[in-house]
Length: 132
Image (cartoon, rainbow, N blue to C red; front, side, top):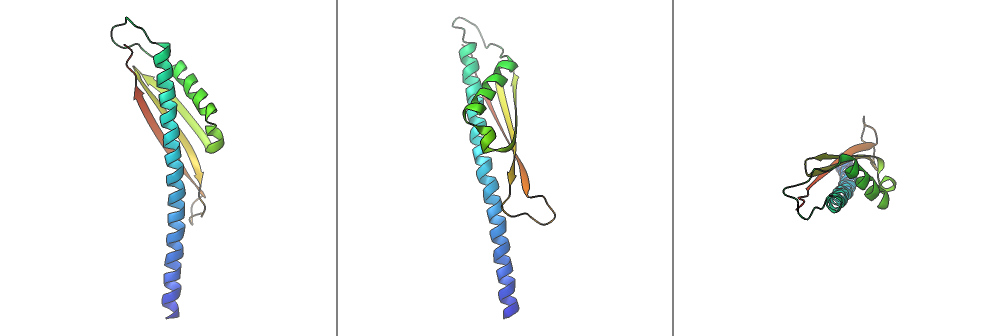
């Protein structure tokens, strides 16, 4: 009976460790997704305001440097570098599509055996802005 109790206790503790680590990664990833969505919308809306042409036919080409500047301003505004460890980002433009990619690392509450105590996560968001 003692062996059975010790075995079940070990399984329950292992499940607590796994669920806690996965929950932390999930919550940080969700916050990173929301930040990437906000950054791409800020860049796309800013570019739409810059390149708005009332009588233009078709779509205007966006400047990648403007997209990067607008993305950096948004990330500074929401203090993303304070909320995410090792935050790295990129903003790219292909035609009228703006894509923002954020990467970060998450410190896990429990360190799995044989592995460092952090996990790398990434999030990507894209927006298409037609200028009419």
